[in-house]
Image 1: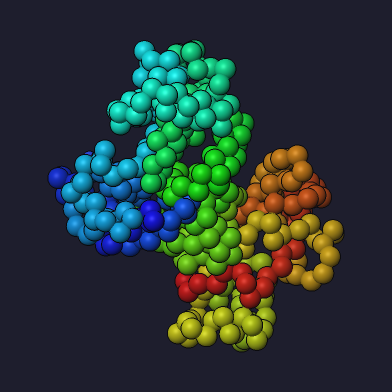
Image 2: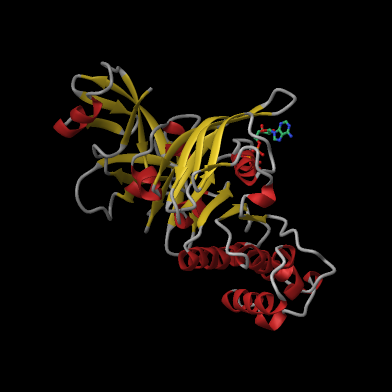
Length: 362
Ligand code: ATP
């Protein structure tokens, strides 16, 4: 069993900065877990404490049931993949991949067969005699992966491994990493600030902010049931729209129009203590052009700032409640550019509001 347990793990740097605050996390054997959050939230520090590259200030780290706090990185049986690849420039691809096996004093034959197997699985066979300088970014990253998998470690720790790659290669490598992890079934902790990577790669996602864990869950659960406004706004692209709503006469009054407080909505609000003002979250994809919309919803006129065509979708940015800009992802939109009461191009949109829409106390 190579589960990883963080039990109230904290990190305080010598200058007094608290980077990680009493994080509790149980990563089960074989699981692919993503640490995600904005810059400085403590993702890398958490990963480095698991790796042994940073001391743990308080709390306990266990891998496979054994306390690791005092154990040196090389004795933890884990492999790290960094954003910078950290390849040896004077060594060939073959020697780079073989390096951890040589350190572990495997015999030549075993090394050779393990290197060939790793190279085959990462499509590096034809590049084994090249040096890193003669490789593309994606190829270098695959060599770094090769070096990590060749030793069959208990766990992989990856710190933004794809962030030096261009957008297209990044998507390609993302699927490769997912496939590799799936095939090997090795416990993996992966740090990223990219919420698309978080949503697509992980069995579970840990959202961090200011050294604290905000929510841990399967990607779809975070998307559909964010625990707080931070997670709601962080997960999803374009971000969720937030509008304020005042409760008056059994209705929610919003800048979009009134939303009747139906039975399901009342049930959802019950745990809140007689709130007067709420924040309602609406995902951009929960809007449509009113002329094309099927079914019911709240119809409103919006002042359109920008329409970005993404090919199959259109991202529409509009002003709802100053100064916040809101966004909608639509199949199609009819913009009326003529002068009107709002003094600019407008569109008539409809949004479906349901009890599932995030509702939080304001
Ligand atoms: P990024 O995505 O920018 O890499 P991160 O979420 O990985 O960010 P960390 O690198 O873990 O964040 O840093 C967490 C906090 O700890 C930050 O406020 C950072 O400034 C601080 N920090 C990191 N290393 C040190 C250090 N050696 N001494 C003092 N503070 C540090």
